[in-house]
Length: 121
Image 1 (cartoon, rainbow, N blue to C red):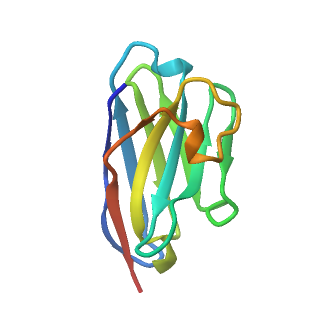
Image 2 (image 1 turned 90 degrees about the vertical axis):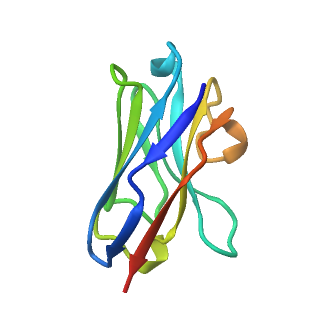
């Protein structure tokens, strides 16, 4: 599986961005898809994930971010609203073929190269 994220950029605080992650392969619908982020000088952290039946969110983004997927297009999305400067990071999408623990990066088998989101104050 190859992943490519799109949609990063510069936005003012309070604004919105939508990230997309396109995946190759025929079994996209069977994968758990996740978004992680890494800010400068910080460790990578979980943002959101979606299985075939539910979505999961980090507390820091709950109510502001929405993850969704379109299996027909092999694409997962992250709609980010009410952005804050602390959301500034490189955002990575990832795919897991079988793990039930969606919150850990070690559960994911495939990673995209990341896209930079910068939120100005």
